Image 1 (cartoon, rainbow, N blue to C red):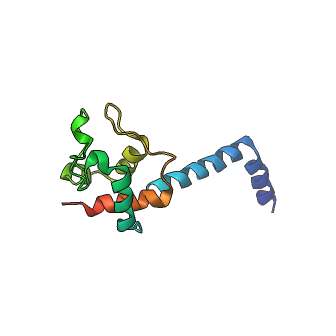
Image 2 (cartoon, rainbow, N blue to C red):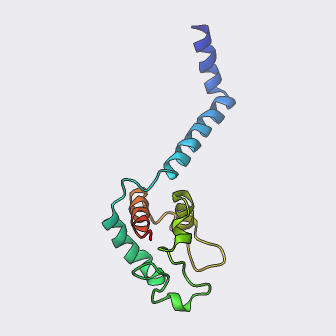
Length: 127
């Protein structure tokens, strides 16, 4: 019982706040590392065509209508190079963009479910 009371005092301390914060951050990281499983490919395809197809092309080969105007050109998302990236790496690019390119991040524009749908669609393009 004394150990429990001592622990409760500890949790209320600055160390306890730091521990709660670290648990929260770990939970956020684990959520962001979740694989594309469970994403809806058809919803992802629709979202892709609305948000990504103008640059990356409807077939994700990097040949969209705006792609010819961009330097460097958009990535071929169906390529082995892109498909070899981890889900975490792809999510990072989608959310934060790519420095030195026209790829802007979609952080704040996509809900978690949409992100999983988009990732599921991108994985369906694997050669």
